[in-house]
Length: 75
Image 1 (tube, rainbow, N blue to C red):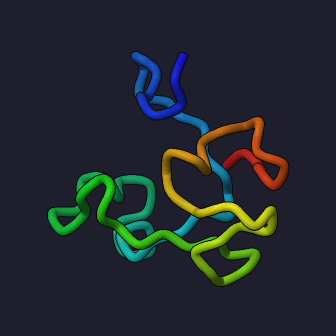
Image 2 (image 1 turned 60 degrees about the horizontal axis):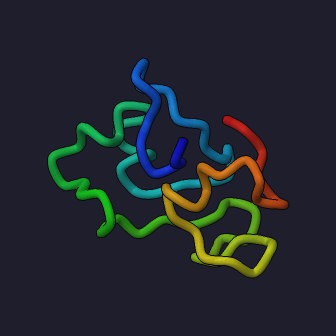
């Protein structure tokens, strides 16, 4: 199963260190933010405070939902 699509029950694992403005305002309902558009939101890692994770890879909802990532810590 691809990490890009949520499970039928809506659950998709993601790293607890992933953050974006919509998450700060709307919490777990961030994807319902009228200004949030998948693929255009600027995510950052709270461990690095940058758009790059501690493993040197990019930060996004898709890649930070991969439990195989070395820095992944499930939310």
